[in-house]
Length: 420
Image (spheres, helix red, strand yellow):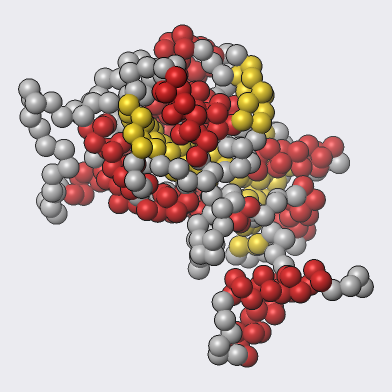
């Protein structure tokens, strides 16, 4: 059914259609409206046979989901930013135990300094925890990926994180086709757990494993992720047959035919990038884009096939591995390393802490990649004047104070200056 609906509430309705049996909730911006939405559906009885548990922290939310999943229930939770960090131990435990929990991550910057706006720092902090990570570009895709996530998690018996850009998607009102129960039931079979705590058949889950077996356990977790590279496209095809639209997949190419420059990104910024690609195509520039849906597992072979024919690859990402550069760019560099003639790779960090990513800025970036390529990570729309003053302050004065407060003070003073 087509609805003009807030992204969070559309996701809540889709999650309810997947018939979760335990939902563990702790509010944190910007995912709060999602758990509020499913909570309301439980309260009104629209979502039946589901226990909605209010817990005392994010760590408790995932811990309860782990217990529920181990006991044989279809479990769901959601979090964001600092909440994901607070549950970090449980994030690794859920993956290590092979429990098919689905969790929404409302992508938000990690402090300090405190910031509630969108970037991908939180997802990147857990990129190696063993969860499948799927990134949504639109609210329609966010709805569809949740349905696909439950099937994928339960087929492989491993957790799946659906990453949706905070505020940009969670709080945006868009037209979304929310499926009906019959469609979801046709795609997602009843939950049949691979492992379950059963008093009639006692077993241990989470036993200590020493050096004699730990490598093998970790290898098999990696093997499951590699299986997901095959299952994600297959399930996406099944989804299209039932729902009548494409969803999921490992990645989505856009206007890459004859493209000499290809832009790679994840999440909602892909929509803006596509607009810029269209504008530049109209001007005769041979440019295209690839939007990555599955960040973990990382689609190395698929990216290599698409990018190998390009001259330049521009990676636009909303995160930074401090001291290294862009984590997505690093992964793409690894994928291209063994090509005979790899394209030139250009890394750009953009949108940190919710800074708007403007079309004009992206167009200049894409042109710069061809005309005057750079080494290392380029910070899109960086205020070099403010940065330079702060570097000078730190070098000149031992007690230079907090960088964050100093920069805010500079910006406030600049805004008070008269024109000219």
